[in-house]
Length: 242
Image (cartoon, rainbow, N blue to C red; front, side, top):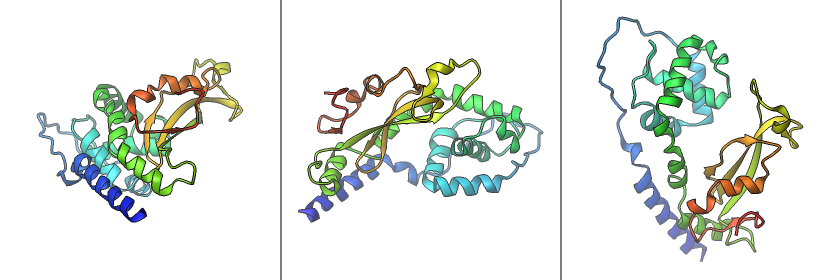
């Protein structure tokens, strides 16, 4: 029985790879410059540290996907190598640094320009991340097969799990009492994450204030039932979902 399930799972893995991972065979995106400036290309300080950190925490494939599919299709200003501008954006996410702290690598004004252009001007492309999360790493068939193969007895039907996460944060003008986290005993923000039995994150909720938004309301607001298959089964939270 397990051998048959393994064969079926390998077929589903291959199908997912064939349909959603074609970018691995793509060449690097080449942008044709429409304007040429006299500014010399500057060096990003500690660029080796940035590269080593991203390789350690993300690996090659996520960085290649980010650079080629999300970041590398647009010209960004400032006299630095285009690929290194993208690495700076990724490094800030991985190391959770503020824009002021990124001044360690390039002037704050230069990084602010790249940051604004990527997160604001390219917002339409970033919105595709939800689609990528839901389709690139998991399918209903894969989840069902994985659940049958690896879940403990009595839970062979469970394909998805939900979990809440509080992160420490504060900003000027925030209403501190509304941000109070009972887990952290300090101000923070709360998100809900939907993970499948393979360990892949399929959906992340919007970030909300900790105190006034219980898990049940967040789960309903995620629109989870519109984004999963009828054959999926969510472990727990029966008070929030049918």
